[in-house]
Image (cartoon, rainbow, N blue to C red; front, side, top):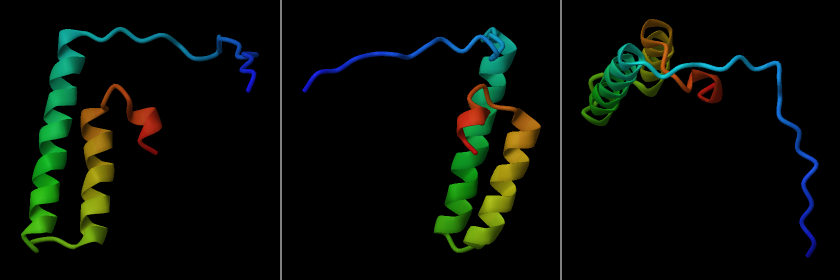
Length: 70
């Protein structure tokens, strides 16, 4: 098998700096997501409610990699 690369770097994607503040928001996002999963696992919220909470978490915490979460 021959592998070739015709990939071009996308120049329309703005670069982002990963600051300490953004790292903190990412950490808080991950904690919120873990807590949401625990709520589902313990039967305190439904899967549908967890999806809604996750969407709100993305909006509130703006994780660094949110574009790939959709």
